[in-house]
Image 1 (spheres, rainbow, N blue to C red):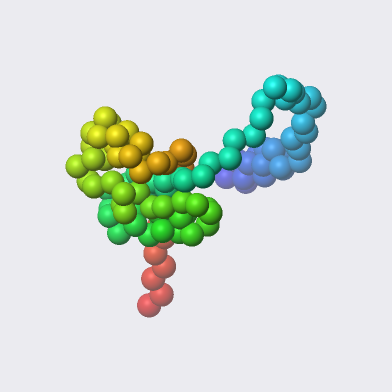
Image 2: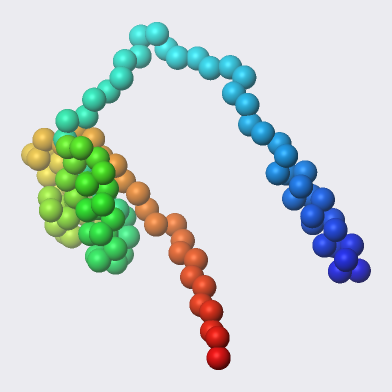
Length: 112
C-alpha cells in the first residue's frame, strides 16, 4: 500500500517538474516612463528589534541612496500612520522598500 502511494507521489512530482513557463505576450504603455527614486527608506516589519535593524542595514547597504527606518522613525511613529507620513515627508523620502518576515523554518539534528 505504501509502495503505491510512493509511486503515485513520484509520478505526480515528475509531471509537475517537467512543465515550463513561457511568456507568450507582453504590453507596455508607450507613455509610461521609468521612475528614479532619490531617497529611499528601508523598512522591515517585524517585532524583534535586532532582526529589524539587521535586515534594514543590509537592505540599505544593497540599495544606493537608502536609509534604514530605525534611524529616521521612532517606535511611537511606526504605530501612527499620520506621524509616519509626516516624518517621511520631512525627511525628503520619495520611495520605500518594505518587507515582512512570513515564516522561519528551523530544524535541529541530534547525534548521540
